Length: 375
Length: 175
Image 1 (tube, each protein chain N blue to C red):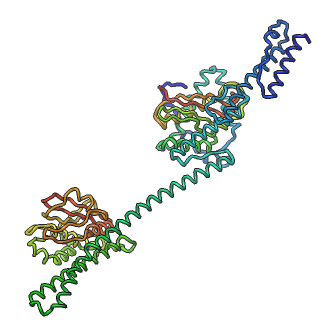
Image 2 (cartoon, each protein chain N blue to C red):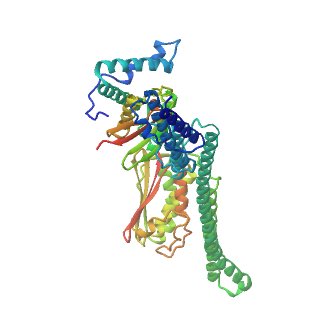
Image 3 (cartoon, helix red, strand yellow):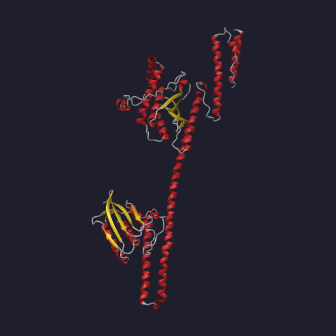
């Protein structure tokens, strides 16, 4: 071995020792390898060791960055020393992307083939999914609770206004009759008794409606559909209302065809028709007209109650059928209402697979329509 | 990736035939070794006859055709991007093609970096110093083409045969 060759091997040995200690340094052998007599194998060894040192330094830089979580450092190309670390790097980049998607709300991300990490990660996303479902349920329950509170408030509001005040006149007149019976003429006594009767009737009607409505809010009400004759039901209700109509000289006209049938609950639809006719009477002036008509539409029978009364301001129409909508208004002869009638109509019609709506022009009149399934 | 307009090829998924009828005993599956036997002998012959560039081009084009048919027949293109990628990931596992992972996804510019580990074509190959997954480049381009209606350039930048233990592909829109 020549002196040059010994120096080369010594320098290479030092380089390799340094590499084993985690240090990087290429063997500076430019002078030695330029010797024209150098053995080609030795020259190749020098190049390989220097190449190893270079690639080791590249690998070291990359692995250091990886160990601190810096995934932006690009892995060195064609460096076989970092092959497995590149795979780790790729996996970490993918996990980072998946975590970003989860942060955006995509809880369907799953990790495959990463042993315990896959199990833990997938458990975490499943928990997040379950929590999201729970949150959605909570929001739903919260809305239902809000609705229930509105219902309760409406009830209390009606009770405090409409249920208490008639008792003022009932108790007042009863008191007068009891304490000063002999002081009044027969005519006056009849007037007091009539007032007690009228107040009792309206209070009873309110209690009936309250009961029907509160039942419909719980699980208590259920429709029992059967074949019903809408003409007959309407004739019956018009008969009940003819005295009231006569006091305002309002004409009631039933245009429903004799063989008009629907498949619905008899009591519920009777209540709906009575309520709509009552409303029409309340909001129509003296000598006005009320019609009730039918037609077929999209496989349903449609009933419409039309009047040429006061109409409804467009700003109020949206809340007409709502529990938390506006309170009732007085009729054309100062008739009072509960604000519950239309809410009950909506509940009853929808319980029978129908829809209810209104078309109205202020000072021209209103048309309340509802649909029911055909037999 | 060849960006020439795709011709109408006489291949559809149905040309694969009904394997359950044809192989009632041997079934749907074979080994990766047999798949590679066919793939790499074909590759070697093409290299000898046509040279490297043409061979790569042929594998990319046929990969694209395969990706188009695979997407049309096995994937739901109505899904959102994330759900589509999740379905693609699962289908590639189900069909033992590889384990697809997303490293980067820029939705606006429609550029992606994907990795496929345990790739059917190359995982476990000796180090040749060059990428060999030309068919996969086309396959991915074909799938993205059907999903988005646009043309993509897919380039493999890391491969098992370049000494990396996973295949990495860049996917970019053709401008």
